[in-house]
Length: 157
Image (cartoon, rainbow, N blue to C red; front, side, top):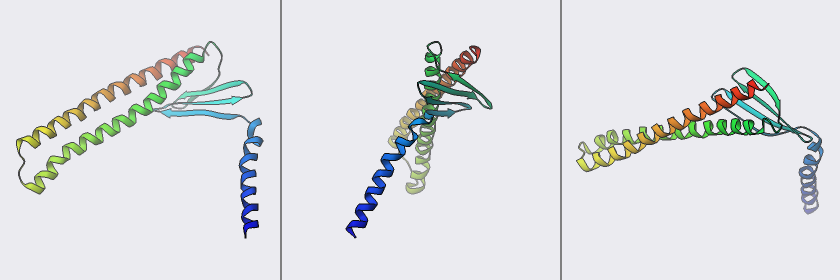
């Protein structure tokens, strides 16, 4: 039994070690992301980084060089910010929804609410509304950044 377990463990270990060695000659996808119709994919082949960028159905391959590397990085950052800000906006909206549902739940249980609880709930609702507004401004800014860097990269082609 121990011999079979040892052989099985050795086989798994060799499989884990051998797979990365076999795949080192292939093209590696380093990073990829997409949000709101924009997308990018970074692949590495030897010493060359190739970016596939696009918006909706339009896709373009760009080889990274010193002239476009900053713009490509800004484009990637903008798309990642769009993803983060979209998630934050969903969380903030869910928080506000829960805070606004709390008085209905309390009213159903107690049949009355005092002014202190209404004031506390109002403060939390205003906080949720503040986060929604700030996240929507950040999301809009990130979308504009992605559009700006995408148009710059498309003009250079």
